[in-house]
Length: 393
Image (cartoon, helix red, strand yellow):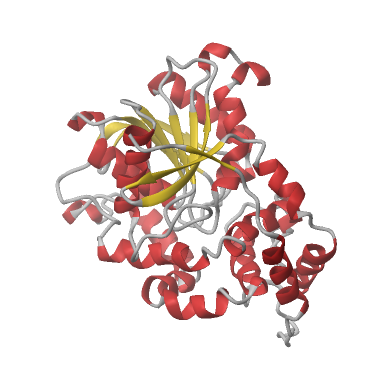
């Protein structure tokens, strides 16, 4: 079992000075008069965000918030893994690991730990509490980088190593969105209880690993309509994916030197991929869902850790390991819960299609929410996850 050490976020002042200096020195440039959000990050909003970053945002207060959670560091297969480990009110229940994706971080899931670990403090029952683990993925946040790009199937090996080899759990549940959903799928497939492994069940709010072979093709009219809708939506939203999936280093040379660049790259995704109110020609108001402090704390977890580079590698890694489809004729047999949010940028397929790849036992069509479901709609997200855990966790 790996040695576990307590961890506290404590970014050196000189690093904060570097970030502030790079923001102040940024040389702004022109944008089209009709820009809005349609060409990328809205320049007017980005200037507003950066002004707030310089003059009002308090990283030390954000650190204090992060450090309110019990954080640790351990080594898994030679790489440092950072994680939150909240011991629950009922240790007899299976633990749950919550997995983030890109351009998010462990920060977007922290608010779930209390209600899941100690539901009696939030109007629930103590007997429903369970241990909650929220890691930073390999190459993200305070976790160490891989020596070269890895994809979600390799990430699953590290996460299982954390849960079993480090923390000693012999059975656990997984929840994931974005890359976390793909990692959850591979955890269920490679380490599922159906194969004698420790993963008891998985819950996802994105279906990223699809059926392999001929089953990959949509068959019913509903499936074909979903495929057309998904293709149309992704056609205008995957430029970033192509860059990060083919030439992540070229992009990183610019981003690693520019906090403003990272802010633009990430903020545009939070705007475009979220379910914002007043969505219209101007694209909606991002602050109907997120505060500037929330956006900037997530951005800082890429900037001060200097992890934009290695986080982007995962897009290259998924291609090398062919991580988007299960082997032909096989599927993930552990009990699977799927939540479909209407503004998910990668629309969840019909249940008939998902069942080709998963043992779907729980299905929820949510009334609102987008790609960052746990962050955007914590109440309905928690309600759905609790229902799944009650019946299958």
